Each structure stands twice: as structure tokens, then as C-alpha cells.
Image (cartoon, rainbow, N blue to C red; front, side, top):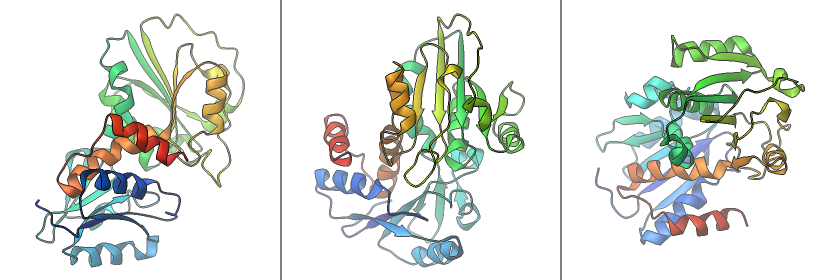
Length: 289
């Protein structure tokens, strides 16, 4: 799709004021000298269908990112689902084709894996991920990890929902579920030799986000050498990551996933890859001021 000066894209959700996406996309547009914009647009569940119908008719609209709580609700409102979005069962990016048709994509999985690519490129005897959360982002993360050969322990308030999600996204594989309360209590479990293994612990829930209670997690559940990953971006330095760093674990913050998924979406919206590499350092500095 060829875009023209004046095009704009958006991020929609409820709430949306905390989103860093406008700052990311506007930074890239400025670096590229593109005359375009990216906005945050609050859209309630009741207004979602009207929003999509209105934007279909807007020739200047280059598409939108979709965040909580609309990633699944928006699916029947688009005309086509990309294979990844269909398999995940959630949409986080919508792009028009110029003829009034909308395609739903999911860039969360690619964004989540971006900071792990060097690790995943290595060979391992075993890969295990403990994932907290069962929402739209968690769906993309579970699908991405399953595709990379991870055995997953999925934890949520409702273990039955977690089991249904695993059975839907990766049927037939030996994954496990646990209530969130399981990881809040200390354990005396002795981990076996983790040499040659890749272990992840991922907070894919809103817990720890500004306005939400913190993730109640006891680090006795974490194997030695694990990577701790928190997708929350506000604040970037969550109590979960602070505790992980204090205990000497390598950690990855939510900006890594946010920037990674935004880069994929940006190219779909504006027809050009965003400037990365050295610009990522300045972008992160700008976002954390």
C-alpha cells in the first residue's frame, strides 16, 4: 500500500493515556522526515464497532494498534486475519488495504521474541517458560514460545482458563498450568542441573502496572540462570524486575517488546522500516525521562 503525506495511525484502548506508542512512532517519523502522525485514541468497548466503521471511510487513516481490552473483541470487525493473528486468537494491529478492507495482524509475538533472538538461536537441551497471565498479550507470547520449542507453565487466576488457552494454542504438547497463588508461596524445590537449558519467567499480566497491584511472586520458583521478562511498560522498572535484578537475574523490560512490536506495525502503517540500532538507545532514553 502506497501512503501519502498526511496519513496518520493510532493506538486504541481503554484506558490509553499511559501508552508510549505515540512517542515511539512519532520519534521514528521525525527521524525519517515523514509528514505523518500517530495518535492515542481512547475507545471504549461500547464504541469499538463505531470506531472501526468510521475509520474504514477515512482515506488518511493508515491503521491502528489495538491494546487492552480490545485485542479479541476487534477480531470479528476486520475483513481478514493474518495467519499469526488467527492462530493466536488476538489482533493488535489493523491495516486498511485502500479499498475499504481491513486486515488484522498480531505483532506481539515478534516483538516479544526480538530481545531473545540471540538466546533462541543457540541450541538447548530443554527450554522452559513460566508465564503469568492469560490475556491477549499472553496468548501471543504462549504461541511464540511454543513455536520455539518451550515447555510452558501458564499461571493465572483461573487455572481452567489457562488450560483451555494452552489446549487451544498448542494442543497435544506437554504444557502445565498453575494458579497465580502457587508462585506467591515459597518452595523448597531443588532444581536439577540447568546446564544447556534456557529458562524464562515472564510476567504477561497487568500486575505491577501503574494503578494495579504488584505481582506477588517468590523467587524460590526461579531456576538458576533464568531470564526474567516483564512486559509491563508503566512503570518500566517494576517491583518484579527490581527484585530480579537484586537477586542477580538477567532481566528484560517491557520497552523491549513494545519497541519490537511497534517496529513491525510501523512498517505496515507507513510502508518503510523504522530507523533502529543506534536510534534505539536514544528512543529508550527519551521514553524513560
